[in-house]
Image (cartoon, rainbow, N blue to C red; front, top):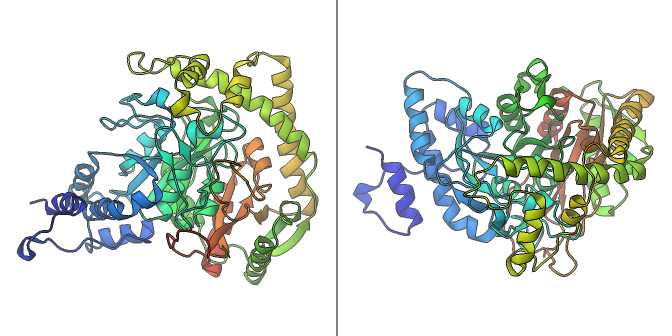
Length: 522
């Protein structure tokens, strides 16, 4: 007998069962950490199938409020049942049966699931293949529950866009205040995990697309070192800056997920060192990891919002109480120049990378074969694709001259040098610190189709994105009920170090609170 899928589908349809036919209650998943649920499953207090069923049932009530999920995987419950069978046969993989959600710019082989990047141009892009990062997660036993909404094309279509909106998925909403932005571009993943619709999620980042939605949704989000996680099978923006990463309720969950995600991929040259660099990230998690650590305080990334600054000062007091030695870092060199070079790199690499990706898709399912085709498609379907904002960045990218353009090559070299060796690395050396901390950004802003996105702060992570260095955000508190995050930034391959610091802060601060699904800020 397999009653739980029947229960999930029956309750989701609003049909009551007689008391005698009711199976055991589903586990409580609303704000449960992934690792805690796995301990319950390992101890026999729950099953993977029951947990997946609980997410499906919860989604009936919560998903209409937040609009975070584009598509559910019809095989998720049978995959969870198979995980339970494997466990009974002696399989003890730590992530066996974990139900996750995946951003819909990452390919999965699940039948019927398209990889759309939120665009109607890719509405039929059912590839039937797992991106290597998803293949690694499946090898660890993970179950793909479904695909999440995102800021269309990972927020690279226009410089005047609305985070969390896509033509395929509509507008995702922040679970802490439904009239507020979920940030982007991994908006659906951030909202869904915060809302308790899966155990954990996978997002992607080019610059801020994991850390921003994680911060405003009260989550842990890690943008790994570029090259630690494969990008093959992910709709691209930038070969220099793109990466996938975990979005979770706890640092422990992020460490467990990253351990499974990390690894080399022959099709992605950037990952050549990944097998040698990857580690058991959960082994780094110790409550006293901050004791004696010299941490640089990114004063240049604060000062944009008094209420966020107050929460930041409280977080610094927690770090100090845990034994960290705090050193003020007043300025970051050449920040404006970094941003200008970054945009040149992103636009050139967008055209090259997207053209290559589209060429790899099935021409019977994806008629847009180039960026130019996508631009033309958007114009032809402007009533559905461009009613809220345009495609100015796409058009600028199409006008670029390719990766052999000397201007691109100079911008790429200058950006990497200024952000990395002469930026983050130089600050770490100058102030004798092992990592930098600062407010990830301010609280979520109202969703506004007229004025579009109105980011508050966000200077903590730009250099890490450009340099390809790791960036971890951890909940540090709230401003009027809206979460704000604390960023930990370090040199290349310091992912484990940052997770250790973030874990020690998280355990001491206990700052995360569950979302309230309030209609707005009172």
